[in-house]
Amino acid sequence: MTAAGLEPWQWRDLLRREIDLPRGVVDVPVGDALGRVLGAPVSSPEEIPAVPTAAMDGFAVRREDLATGSTALPVSIDIAARPGEIAALEPGTAARIMTGAPVPAGADVVIEVEATDADPFGSAPGIVTLMLAALPPAQRHVRGPGEEVARGDVLARPGDRVGGGLIGLARTLGLATFPVLRPLRVGVVVTGDELTGEAAEPGTVRESNGAMLSAALAADGAEAHAVHSGDEHEQLRSGLEVAAVDVDLVITTGGIGHGAFDVVKTLLGERGAGTSRFEHLLLRPGGPQGYGHLADGTPMIHLPGTPVGALVGYHLFVRPLLPGASAEPRRVLLGDDGAEAGRRRPDGVRALPGRLGRDGTGRERVDLLPGRRLAPYGRADAIVLRGGDQRRGGSGPLNEETTLIIPL
Image (cartoon, rainbow, N blue to C red; front, top):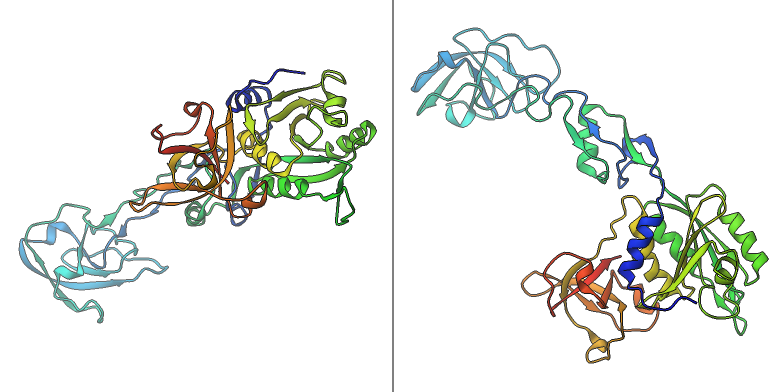
């Protein structure tokens, strides 16, 4: 049995070094990509705007036809922001133009309607008087081709998450698909003879780890399926075979403590196949942890069987390996610490349920939630990490008023 002593941060770093999950890229329709993580850069296939366009409602004119003070010009064209060919602007005339409409050839300035005697909501006048305190620079209120987006501009980079703005930009540019990371496929093996579906016999409990971890994986963009295994070696071998079909990662829960019936550890640990390493970390809950590989090289992460231990282990050790998952801890103000106030701190890190909010000055803070085991995680939106080496994770000032959290 390996002596206890590893900090959670050491284990987290070790798994990042030892487990490299695939990052395949697939093209998906733009409309289906919301929330997905890009696996390749997205570049612009064309310019925005494609032609010079008006940045203001007003009148397109030739700068050479203007003078300081008042200039009266006949209006030769009325241009709305709609499809159709636009005639060139005749010298010595003006074109009434709307925002976003193409500027006619020959015009190099748009004078805003507020600087004219025209009725903004009426018909185009026959003659417009432009009132200028000074001559405007060339191209004033004219958006040149490519001014917003040039051809070949990188719009988003690998690792960026697709949001509404990028989808709108893609539609503007005519992009049909995005190159996003293929969802990881994960098999979850939940061990324990005592676990059942719905029965409530003495000595049994309803199995929840499979549904809980599958939901957490789905929230982080992975595809998961869960199977249940009993506490016999042959049952676990069979469960692993089923779970490992066409997956990138296998997660097990339970069976990694120090007891005679800890099937994962006895089958895969140093007294068994020797393909997995197990440690008891300086972490509560979730101290027992392990990792290894199946015969075909598929990586495995072994989490505790208690639901809260499995949940904490998932967010501390699995999420950092998932492409695009936001798993880095950050430091926030510690608000109400409830029953933890004055409590003796154990060695290592204690993971506690918290709820994020703001203090009276608007600074982010976290309050610890009362309750035991999994119950407070029904409302929690953060795991609060107390004790241990607080310098190892998170950004922000390190002081007694702050604490590390991992948002859920």
